[in-house]
Each structure stands twice: as structure tokens, then as C-alpha cells.
Image (cartoon, rainbow, N blue to C red; front, side):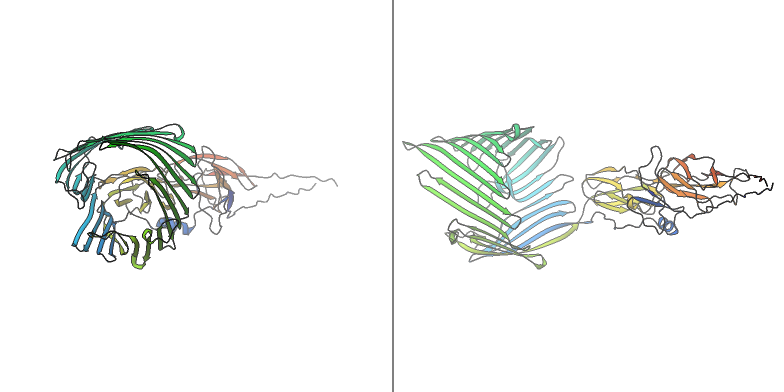
Length: 639
């Protein structure tokens, strides 16, 4: 019998192995860390590619920090005051210059509108108004043409401000305005009490003993308003009103009001009630009943109104009928009145709009008057707009023709021409309006002004309070990058509420953010400080080896390559030195599994659990294998 030993052959699997696995949801209680992408392999849409160690170019890129794909967008350091200056000429009459401006200067909102004329009366300031409003301090200054419910349109000035208790006091000076009845100049004090956007009380008293009281209240579907006014000039008068509206089921609404006034001993009253009925989504009807009366007359009116919307077409019609009773100079009588008014409009997109208005009225003498008008607006191009108002059906009536043309020109110039019954800039005695041409040339300017705003600053910090450089910080629509110390600054931030966050795509590769931002409220020019915290990402390093000398340590010549290691749904493989690494891991506990090994090795331990802190990587996460030794089989052969 001869002995023929069969020597066991070892197969060394020292592979530079790249594992491509399908991206799947992370296993519960195990983190699913990102691992460095393999160089030279383009990742597919549903695949993740990993390799044993980070490529050299990736290490250089991470050391230099993220490369922004777009530059940061900080708040602008300037605001804009848009100003439009127009110079015009009215045919056969005079000249005028109109100046309009709107915008902000240093955070203060500015509105300006004025008209200066030159004609038979010489150079004259015709009208104008200036308004300044500070949205932070909430004060407002008005000058020029000022309107109040106590005095109506006046020339003067008014200052208002915010006060404790949701109040808004105001002091004003009202003088006579050109073209209005002569009045004495008065000083007034006004105070408003507001709650949740509603004016609970609005009171104003003037130095001539005129005064006004007003209150408005809206609760759920109910809206009420009360008003009382007493005036001393130009004539003694008093008037009061109470009105309200109630919205019922599915848009059904009821509204009504009463009004009474006494002027120069003459008393007049007015009462009205209406019901709105939504017939369909595109059609609604309103029924109205009104009563009015004076010392020697009274009237009763019933009306029905309907509106219809069908795509680009809108229709409105009102029919009114009533009786008018009067008694004058010993003569009494009753007249019936009828009036209809119709309006239809059609819009063919933004370029074409047609509006047709028809009205019929029966006067006190019984004569019937008809009035028809067609308004056509056509946008010929992006820079040219034409509008015409004509009589219907006789489009050739020149006394009813009104035409308008606006042409935008280069260098932000615009030419505007009007034709029709146009008044001159200055009134012309003993001359009625006649058809004439008016031409104006406008120039638009955007004047840069200093911006106001708050300063929002802070630092991007890691767990130890160290600054993180190169992080993209976002504040609403704005963004800046943190400096070497991790600091960031947003200057000139306007008032409002903003979300403070980090752009996760532009964080340094060794850090991660939990996505928890902050809500920042900017109310004025004061400075705000807010820090953002990020978590350092670390790595797990280990080896797979065969402990041939049984010393429980890795020694030269014991490495096993080509062993597949798994954390969650992420895989890597050991290199020729038996080493493996997982990079960019969140601090957490991880279960590391030895997924597969070459056939000539047995797995001593299939998994181990490690805890990764945010201060340092985990090293020494090793796995030991045993060599598979095949027995020598002796065979005997009989001869």
C-alpha cells in the first residue's frame, strides 16, 4: 500500500474589490452611513458605489472645504426710490410737470405725487402730497393734499404715531384747498383704538369744535360700522349712519344701513336693505330696496342686479324702478323713475380688453336719456398700448372720442398721448372742455438710497464649540458663508420673519446638520445673534486577519483581503493589507457584520457592535478568521 498525500492548496484573495450594491432603506437601529465613492465609476440612479479608502482628490477637496456652486446672496446694502418725471403740453393751453416717486430711503417708506403748471396764471403748484412712513417705529408724516373724514379734502399736514394700548394718535392742520369752499384753518387731534386689525374707536376733534366718532367691528360673518360727525364750517351740519352686513349659508348675504343728516336746518334720511343670492357658481343676483326723504320730498326705489361670469366674458345688469313724491310751492305730485345700466367686458388674454357700458334714465320731466360707450384696450406689443373710448353704435362721433397711446422708449423713457375732452392744466375762464391733444414725456429713474435693516449674526459650531469654516448659512432668501472662525453676518436684513438654516449640500464633508433651523423675527434695526450647531462626522477603521500565532493581535503576513464588510445596507471590502474603513458616519452605535470571506477561511465572529462618538474615529474594529485545513486522506490499494 502506497501513501499518496493530497496537499491542500490555498487560494489568496487579495482583491482591490469594488462592491456595487442597490440603495435600500437603512436597517432599523443601524445607521446607514455614506461611504466614499469609487473613483472612475459613475454611480447609477439606483446604485451606490463604494471603495475601500477615500481617493486622494477627495481628501484634498475635503481639506479645502466645499466648493460653492453658486455665490452667496446677502441682503442688498441699498434700497431704491423709483422716480418718474413727466413734462406735458395741452394743445392751445399750457404746460405741466408731474413728479411721482415711491420707494424707501434708509428704511423709511416714501410716496410723492405733485403737479406743477405753467400757464395764464404763471408758474403754480397745483397739487401734491408727500407721505413718509417708518415701518419699525410706525410713525407717519403727511403733507400737501390731506384727506380726513372730518374735513374732507384739505391742504395741510398730519403726524401720527403708535402708542401703548393699540392706539394711534394724530395731530393735523387743515387749511383751505384750491378749488374748494373757503374754510378757516384748524388744528385737530385724532385718536384710534385698534384691536386685531379692527378700529374699535376712531375719534377726531378740531379747534373749531367740529368732531367725528366712528367705530367698526367685524365678528365672524357679521360686520358693523357706526359713524357720527358734527361740523361748524362752512355751514353747521350733522350726519350719522349705521350699516352692517351678515353673510349666511353658502354666500347668501344680507346688508342694510340707515343714514340721516341735518344741514342748515334741512333734514334728510336714507334707508336701504339688500339681499345677495348666489344662484350658481357663475351667477348671482342682488335685490335692493331703498327709501329716502327730505322735508318736501320722498322716494322709494326697488332694484335688481345680476352679474354673470363665463370664461373671459363678464356681464352686469342693473334695473331700478321707483316713485318720487314732492311738494313744492303748494304743488304736490308723483313721478315714476326707471333706470337701467348694463356693462359687459371681454378679455382676450393680456393683449385685448373690451368693455361696453349702456345706461338708460328717465328724468323727473319724463324725458328718457340713453348713454352708450365702448372702451377698447389693445396691447400692440410689449412696449405699445392703445386705448379708445367711443360712442356706440356711432363710432364716428368726435365729441365722444377719447384716445390714449403709450409708447415705451429706450433709456426708460415713455411717450403718452391723450386726445378728447381734456381739461387744461390751469382752468381757463369762460371756456368749456373741448377735444384737444395732450402729450407727455416721462422719464423713470431708480435712485439708489441707503438701506436700513437689522444685523443677524452668529457662529456655526461643532460639539466642542469650535467654529466651522465654509458653511453656507441661509436666512430666508439670503445666504452667506461662514469665515475661518465659523462666524457669519447678515447686514441690512429687512423686517419680517425668516428661516435660519444651513445648506447641507455646501457643508464641509466631515460635518453633518440635523436639519433643525430657527425662526428669526426681524422687527427693526437691532442686532440679533443665533448660533447653528453641526455634528462632526467620523470613521470606523478595522482589519480582517488570521491570528496564526494566537497572540490576539495583527501581525505582518496575517492580513486577509477581499473580505466583504457591511454596515446596514452599505458594503466595503478589505484591501490587500486586510484593512477596511467606513467614512462620514454620524455619532451612533453601529453593528458591523462580516458579510462574506474567501472559501478557505472560516468566520470566527460574524458581527460586532461599536459606538462612534463625535470626538474621534473608531479604530481596531477587527475581525479574526480561521484557516480551513483539509485533512490528509490515506488510501490503500490492493494489488
